[in-house]
Image (cartoon, rainbow, N blue to C red; front, side, top):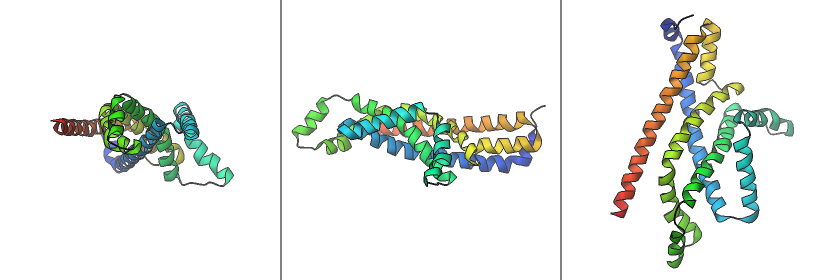
Length: 223
């Protein structure tokens, strides 16, 4: 068996469609997990007794249980208690919950890395805790954790491959289809691997642009 460019020429529309679907779920998963994870991190910072316990349990469960198990639970388990969701809904919810737990800890680490004196200084000028978080703490924390968040994007890209188990036709599903049709595993799956690497590089490039923009904004603000 050898790499066959003719297979790529014949089935490139399938790979292209799979790539677009992967990009779609990567972007949606990145946005939703970032928003949800940041919210969880902020709420944990406020240490609301009962809520904090619930959030800690959520983070521990979603970080320790594989994404595939979470997908199976939501897609196949919840319908047994009357909660039936479509495959795209399950995909976004599962990625958001799973990746949001990791994002929450990254953002919380950024918040905790800031000097305690900033809270006290904000309190001295009559700012509420919520105002302090929104205007003072969170902008600085997000700048600090951008490199970690950019690195974590690769996990979201790779996690989209699991969506093939619920018939989401992303890159892995497309390469599996090509393999079934041509029996050329080398061509099918090496093409998929190349696409994942290209998407990761694209995310890295975009992330570096965001990091530099935030760094320049922060420097100009303090100059």
